[in-house]
Image (cartoon, rainbow, N blue to C red; front, side, top):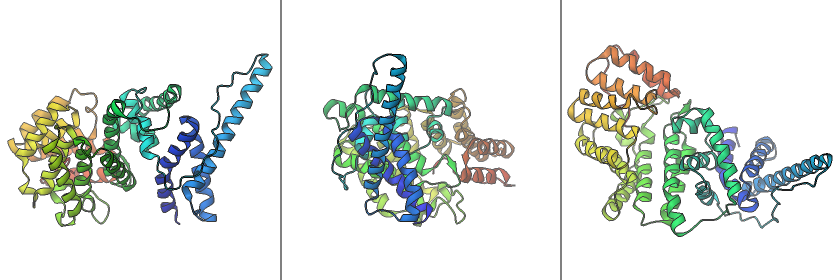
Amino acid sequence: MNAEDLSELLRELAPRVLGSLIRRYHDFDTCEDALQEALLAAANQWPADGVPESPRGWLVTVASRRFVDQVRGERARRHREAFFAGREPADAMVQPAPDEPDHRDRDDTLTLLFMCCHPALAPASRIALTLRAVGGLTTAEIARAFLVPEATMAPRISRAKQRIRASGATFGLSGGREYAERLSAVLHVLYLIFNEGYTASSGPDLYRSDLADEAIRLTRAMHRRLPGDGEVAGLLALMLLTDARRAARTDADGGLVPLDEQDRGRWDAGMIEEGTRLVTDSMLRSPLGPYQLQAAIAALHVAAPRAEDTDWRQIRFLYRVLCRIAPNPMATLNHAVAVAMTDGPHAGLAMLSQLADDGRMARHHRLAGVRAHLLELAGDAPAARENYLIAARGTTSAPEQRYLRDRADRRTLTHSTLTSR
């Protein structure tokens, strides 16, 4: 097994192993530390010794030993400190639970997902912790998803783990009202994980299939558990309709290909059919929600046989509804593009002015990129070039940087669609 395949395997196993450890020991922070040591041991040993017959079982066993060692070491340290201080030791450490049989086909990832969305945590902390524990995103990637500095996000994740431990949360899926209360946060987490996979916020590749595939897998699991929930179906439909374009989003050199220039014959017809059916059924039988609306917009994009056949008026209407029921700057940004495609670029640019004072978007590269695109449509090539360069400097994604710089460097700017990817 080469290094890339090994890394992918370990990333896939990590949340499953962490779920098993927390179910057994109930200490989020120490379990995560033990998992990291086990993953490091696997990365060092498996290339030489070969992948064990049960890689998950191997990781659980090694991580469990590391956990017990950490608990015993910390207990011994506290006893020494208490002895020299002349007081009784206050042993507040977690007691290791008895070993249990290794359920090799058991996947605790979904249960871990719900634990990360515990009511003891604020909504933003639930999402951040889940992205870290289940999605495997780095703190920097999570910070970019939240549009906050990394220095703000790191303490938030640490405090979230501490609160999980202090709450005495049990590792199991809740039911009834508590289940419903956590569902919204869980869906938002899955949405962000997919977005990071579909358009990676940093690195040499546009796409991170591990994250996107895991988000789809977990959302499918949610849909199986809640087949009648319209927003779960809507989120799954949105992921499928978006991911269906994966093969056409990059050229032979890994460069970004915008939606209106993609070879639509390379889109996955099976995923489009499934996603369209899901969103159609859910909108007919369930209260309308933001994920259903976004899925309906995605369905309109993939239904057009050619870019010029896109039903921009219907897309504009759906974005207007989305901005009313779930207002956020990214929805406004995309709404501005739809308005520009129906009412002209100057109408879209006027909408963008609303975002200039929004601290979450004022310096975000997508705002500059969309402004550049609309200025290009309006025929203002110098201003478009300036904004493409601003956008290129604002992203840490190499494919996006190349694409934006290429747009800026073109002698004659031509029509393209930047945000509808």
